Length: 453
Image (cartoon, rainbow, N blue to C red):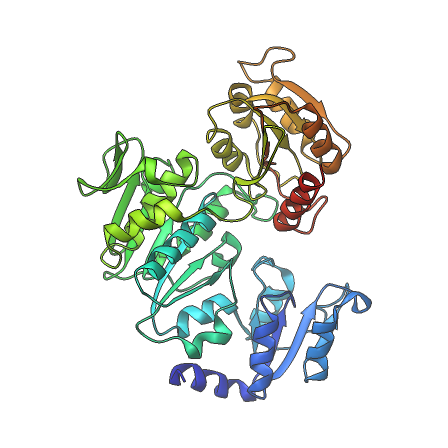
């Protein structure tokens, strides 16, 4: 038992606690609080009649529920756990702070109570693959790893099982980072580009949220940055700052086919199993994150065997000589651009989805260069079509642009258009929320459609 963990939760027994959002990540937190005898109110905007059985079971265990449209009305609490999807500037949170409530989050409290080293990764693109890679490298080197944050299992409820010799590896979104007052021992920022501007008030707020991953580091901590990205290259940590680059000399960089760390070859790019130059960047970030812990022989072994993460340029099927790839994680233009650049041949692209109010002009030239036919659907279909048609390289019909009724229509038409030797890439450059619950659901549905061909 972690004594700090136990003491903290025993101290909460006299507090009124509100947990905002009863999704999968917060349910273990509610159970943990109830086990310590806490007075817990669980708040969720889902109408009561649509709450699932697990949430209603929490009520039977003693959690008071406030649900539906007015789920934050007249809320009284001493401590509030904010769900990552709720902006810290929400009027209800502002009101609670004014009454003296402490507003925190599952992840911030984990940072406070975790007894071991924390490696955290954020960025606009590549953070899940980089986080997973770091975890795989550490496990291959014999370390006990706790993977969580934006991926994996909620870590706070298992914090009392973590020992000082373990390593916690967490992926952090801008929403999780917005009001964080603690930073990781090793912080990685893969890159930054416009994203989530449907939630953040502007790009400056988005960047400032990302900065919290290293803002509170001390002189013993390490910050790892992408030297090729205009925004991240200007950051500077409070401790050691290390850079990686595919284009210039850096602490970890590329020379021919070799990845060098401090001028010494660590890995041959040809040994990396997962495709794409963006995955070379992910490996460079991971190499720096595990520096001094994982040997170069382990890095090489993992590179040759690690097949990637689901929904990230995932090969779904080869049928009649056509390769179908699921890149549902690509919810922004920059991520789709990275996917397009992973293939030597021109691809058939399926794109479009929920509108996050980010610009698509950068996508147009890349589609012209790497795509022979694009099937667009969803709320961003016309924006993507316009971006392609406005690109300097565009010639009418090259690439062909097909506006589809919905996602299913786009997949079916793309599959019908494909011939032997083609690559069909579902890389939407948009979020999934207009037609799906999340990008995972979209990816699984795509795979179902392809397997039924």
